[in-house]
Image 1: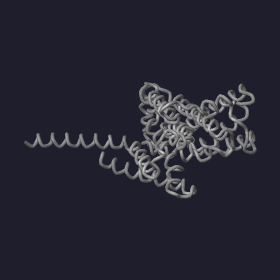
Image 2: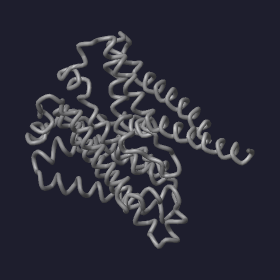
Image 3: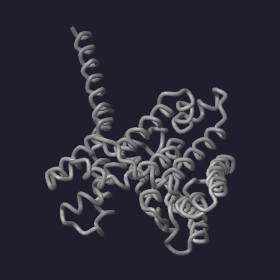
Length: 324
């Protein structure tokens, strides 16, 4: 009888653990659903094709920057330069990529190479990524100012046509978000090399014993960060049509908040591409549209994002305690 009771207790504990893990994975989607419900309650007309197109206009650049940050966090690092890097890419896109496309492509590819070299430097010299990327943020900012001292430039015509695409039935930002989440999820979560990249943050010692190069994985993670940073800057210029050296400065904190809101952890290689995109969409919707409908000044945007992040993290802590 005692053995049966112990077995039933173990099964009950296992079921509770599975429920807690499921709730933890659904937390980003629940956050997005609550924001959408609030918007629908405050302004039902916003829940439409035109409404979503307008509200999610800047969500795609934020989602791409969040994915870029996610790759660095997957390796237990942090990138404090992604915002200024997005601004630098924007300046290159609005000037050289339009006027001298070949030179613009070379510069953008070179910037991805610089990111890869940063990963190698951080690993080989055992430098804190926060310090290195903070220093690079000033470099990217200075280069952006040199390229475009004052707001101006113009997005290439093909980029304007791409961002202005209006498919039937489903707004383009939603399709783009689904595509980004699906592609990155498959590459990082469903492929063998994706397991290796996540393993560099989850258990680097075991990865090294298995014969994999930690240097190469670090280079790959930072190169992917640079790639998606370039995509984010280009998407941003395609939407805004012109550039500014300071246009992406706020993306650093938004990208970190999006990863954490989407279920990522600063250590352990625990990230979720789908959750990161959902987190970015939640922040984009909760910032301007929701505050506007609530008649709250735009100055409270950062405070609102911080409040949402604190609430979600508090809920995650409660779920983690139950899981343990």
